[in-house]
Image (cartoon, rainbow, N blue to C red; front, top):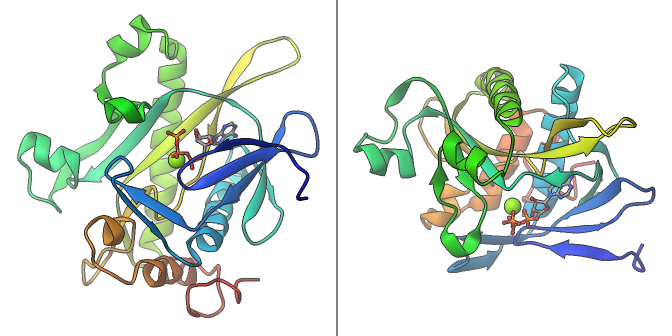
Length: 252
Ligand SMILES: Nc1ncnc2c1ncn2[C@@H]1O[C@H](COP(=O)(O)OP(=O)(O)OP(=O)(O)O)[C@@H](O)[C@H]1O
Ligand SMILES: [Mg+2]
């Protein structure tokens, strides 16, 4: 395991070469960053929780026919995934106004949006991941119009599935971010599949009754008890038998 080749180290995860061609090992770290790396911390146990939560969600998405990169979990912090060519876009789905959309349009945080809104951001930390339109995506060839249609359709299916999943856990799905990638089949035809992770790092999740935040905004806004909130999400999804101390050692 320790001799594997590290292919990429990001802010929250490391990608290693996988055991077979076309696979990768995705390793979840405890590191947390926000505001374009200006704020950093190590949140003990976060990686374990995100690995489990993302596994649970991706596995269920695979089951309902939303194609994802997830193959199987390998251990507490790692999962085997299909290697994709990442499309350099962050696809955000919003159900309720929060964060940048509230600021941009002067909406109150917590206001339900008239319909689910899908947005695209260009993945470039140096530029601060700017909001882009389909025109920009086509003109700069980040993805084809067909890819964009596929990503919107998949993102809305993920939204329907996740909204139901979290509602059942007493959690309001405010918004979330997805990353997609391209895979090539035998005839060199391409297909878009869901990649990266779905976890409290990439979703806004509010307790249905108290409105309390259960996601990375606890870190961004210094609300404390970050891993405890992630552990509570995992517990409510039925992933962890106990709430535990957030280190996740009781997860399996
Ligand atoms: N199946 C996959 N194949 C290839 N790359 C992937 C796959 N799934 C996720 N990735 C990429 O792996 C990286 C995961 O690391 P991490 O989330 O820590 O990155 P990051 O610091 O957020 O930076 P980035 O801006 O590159 O996303 C991301 O760059 C993501 O796009
Ligand atoms: Mg990332």
